[in-house]
Length: 192
Image (cartoon, rainbow, N blue to C red; front, side, top):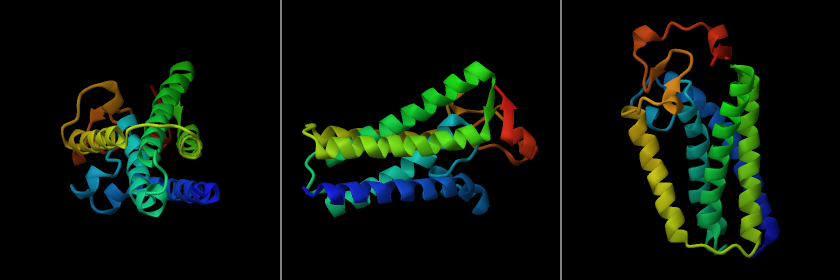
């Protein structure tokens, strides 16, 4: 296995995830709130919906990377699954910790945590791929499939728990048009 090729692939993956993840924040509204686009785009400001911005680009780089280097790296799928899980956990834990301490969410901090989560995940996957980490790729495939199904189903059938609650509108899931009158300032900084 060529460590430089793995490193370059992870760097390219991180750049791709940061760009595509940022764009996915806007694609639902850009495409006229298309119901299909909602499956992989943020439909509100909940933590869950923001995890889509991380999950779907990472899943796409996992699929592309598998055909580029994955067949030569025995633990590729496991490394990428752990990358996705670690990055998502970082975002959730970081968000609820800092908003719990200061009482508000700050857009700049949320955006920074997204980029940190991407770098953290990609670095972890790189270290696992070049190391002696052993795992069953079938388990990783099952985990990724379950996450994919959850992201799609919970877009349309949203549980009424905090992770799925839009803190700006106090609603869950796809928000009806009459409830979308929220100022830009409310979006930038809202009370928890």
